[in-house]
Every structure is written in structure tokens, then in C-alpha cells.
Length: 286
Image 1 (tube, one colour):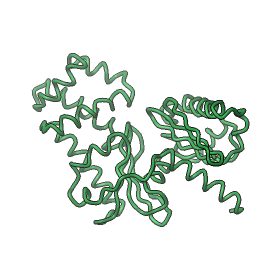
Image 2 (tube, rainbow, N blue to C red):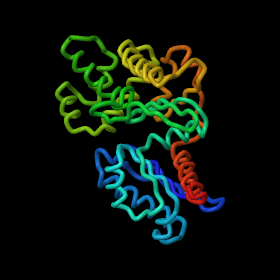
Image 3 (cartoon, rainbow, N blue to C red):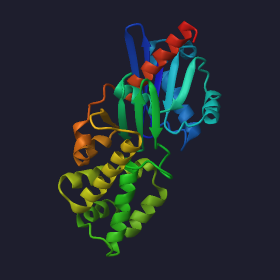
Image 4 (tube, rainbow, N blue to C red):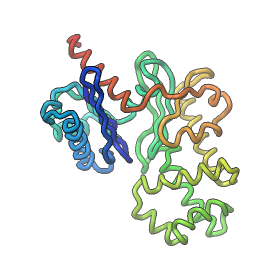
């Protein structure tokens, strides 16, 4: 079996042959922001797996595979990606499904994912319903990009004298020097560049900084609202996944804090489970 979990910051690859598992990491694979770069990343990662296993890369092409990539939405885009690579028993999808399967296994529950981007999901009786995950321009509420962008905007308002945020301003201006530096940075920054400021915000929030707390509480409220829209009810398990989402845990409403459960496994493990399902479906003729 072969699995790929491609994200905006880095990608993970795994191959299972019998009891042995081989894993590799590679660069970003976001099909929305860099389609050709994502295809190259997947090809290079698969080649690296084959090299580590000591087999020709062609030997992996017919292996049951699940490839989940950030931004790989819609049948047309997935078909276009399929034409880029020679895998023959593969299911292409965006990266959300593997993250949900990794976090919840086959069981019921909810996922709030916040890394560079974000999404929310409910899994019930094997069916998955998604909300969000539409990218930094039109969505990704509570993501690290969303939080970093709001922090930079708050500092510009502070410079204008419209809102006070001295702690946040000190951190951001220490990195970017002045307001013009913030504007110049934002003009050429990638989502990952902007997302890097989210850690500054969450650290300030934990220390009690008023603006840091406000921004993080806004993100936590967005998470709570999306989970409610997906039908969450008291006591149902919630997994916070991604690099940022666990930072929101202390700021969630008490009933949701009480429902938090650790993810069962990582997205790459979820991708392997989905690849296993592809193999079982093929063997059963379904």
C-alpha cells in the first residue's frame, strides 16, 4: 500500500509491504497554490520511497494508493492530477479525508483542524461531512494564516492609534521593523509566512495579553460555531488536529473542552487506512 499526505508546509509519504513500513517527508504539496509543484513533490516523494526500499519506482505504480493533497478539490482537478502521475490503482482527494480517518479511525466524532489552513468535519456511520477548508483567500477560519493575518492587521491599526495592542506590536514590529515593513511583507508573503505569526499570538494569549486573547478567543468561537453547524452535541468526541488547533483548547467553551479527545493517529496513518480500503474493495470486487 502507498499513502501520501500533502500539506501546504510539508508532505508525508508511507509505503507498507507486509510487516514493513517505510516513511519519508518532502516539501509542500498544495494543488491549489502550486499545482505543478505539488505533482513534482508527489513524484519525488514516491521515488524516494522506492529508493529507500531498494525497488524500481515503477514497482509502486500499480500498488493500491491514497493520495490526499491540500487544495485538490473536485473531480476535474483530481483527474488533471491523475494525468500527471503514472499510479494506476489510486484514489486522489484533498487532504481532509485522511486527517479525519487518522484522528477518528472508523468511529464517529468531530474534527477541528487548524494548521496553515483549516477545516471542520463530522464522521458518522462511516460518512464524512466537511465544512470549510476553502483556502486562505476565501476561508480557513481559525487557521494559522487567518490568525497571523489578523495579528498583522491589528498592529497596523495600533500604529494608527485605532486599537491598543502594545504587546503584539512589540513582537511584530521587532520582526518587521515598521508599518511599511508589515505591508511589504504581506505583499510578497506566502500563506506559510503569514501563518508563522500565529505562534506569537497564541503565546501572548497564554500570557494574558489582551489582544492576543481576543484574537485567539475569536478563533475558538469560530471553531465552536462550525462544530455546532455540523451537528455537534454535548458529549460527542472532538479531535483538535494540526499544528495550531490544540492551542485553542483552553479557549473553547467548557462543554467542548470536556469533549476533547486525542487523535488516534496522524493523517498519514489515515491515508494508509484508506489505501488499505482501496485494496480490500478491489479484492472483494466492489
